[in-house]
Length: 413
Image 1 (cartoon, helix red, strand yellow):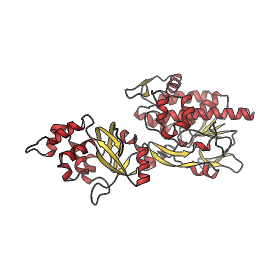
Image 2 (cartoon, rainbow, N blue to C red):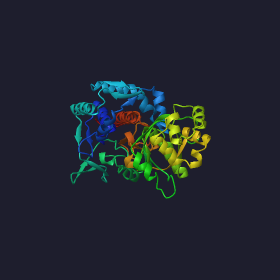
Image 3 (cartoon, one colour):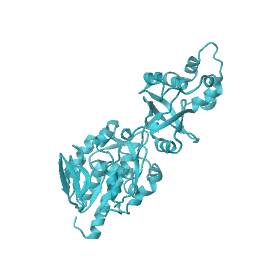
Image 4 (tube, rainbow, N blue to C red):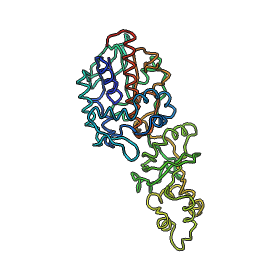
């Protein structure tokens, strides 16, 4: 059996296949496997989420139905049990996210690779898949040489197109299209956005805001998309061109869709989530005497620095000097977003192989014997452990699908 892709989905598919008695060759384009997995570990390696399975599934939005069986079979509790089987103890953080106790990815990856190799999995690095030969063999480029490999079945776990330097470059998409596989174009997900020009003659932020505050977080804060009543609390960061960070990522799918439909999107930011609208209005209406607006807002509401700069950046002088308008803006400051940042900067990608292109086992209907798993499938999820959970779950589903398909065809594993 061949598994192409050495990320979490590829490694999990290889594990299922080897435990099912198959001889497995795993191929990856990079000099070592699990590079994006290790990068995720720099933030503590959020493995999964502790939410009940049905709630966890809702996080996948339109993809929840297609992912139902796979995620139900390998949910957050199953991920924790699997990690424990590798000797990795986990804990649940205050947000419900699940992390290894040591907050590191490397020990888990080392234990996992040791178990895979002990199970007979052969790992071939520096093998970049380049499609199929006319007779159906897998074709690889390895250190300037062409390598061919024949497999009874193949699991593709090639990732999306974010962080191409770590191996996920989306080059596989046209090769599958040529074979008649239905795909959705890849798009950035969990990404930052560029702001629309905030004044005449600007490309985005003013030079003052960019030079003084780029890289600084806006916190505490809450946000909502225009038209929504509820606000979600969190924080985000001002960048040279716009905004990024966890609070932005939570809205990225809907913001991207609104920009595609309307050419721009409006994101509302509550700069004072700890204050009610009535409290804010009372303070903006309070006489300030000889004090400047900046001094008044700092002393009465704690607005200063970056938050004050954002108000001056986005509001006209007459809005700043109108108590009611200022109060409304402090609770719902509109940021106009022009475009998502390039896909290679995104944490993950949307789009990929459509679930309609797969049979119930995870096999491509147009290419019998070829199965797909992980981020190359057409689903997306917010950060919070959901990405890894779905990669693990779809890989286990595909691996079991391979074993079932081989058994049905009476092909020895």
